Length: 122
Image (cartoon, rainbow, N blue to C red; front, top):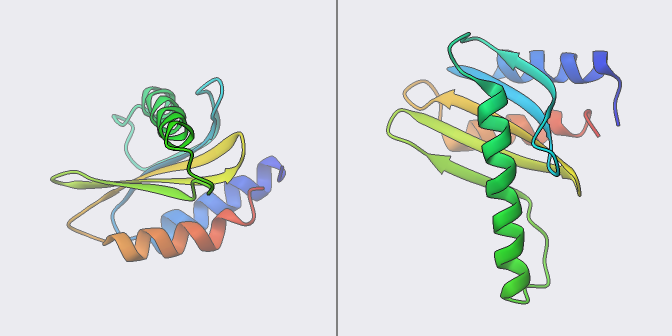
């Protein structure tokens, strides 16, 4: 795992490179706890979002197992009316969760930027 500074730097780059960036967290999949956070909106509760998204990831992995899929989960994209939520799996037990304003960016930008900078957090 990267150092605290390397993770903070990666999140700073992600925030700078994604127009409409709202928040991002590095999340332990098993516990749902945040390992690192970066937010532009104090009203966006990353602790709650991280915990619930860890459940989402675990359920998707269970579904894949139930279907006997012989592949890995790379990422999950959720589009809301006004936001994009993106989950990037960075190791078997850790993922990046990100939220961005849908009117200011698009899925391709979010995915490209997170993929680029996710390599530095593992």
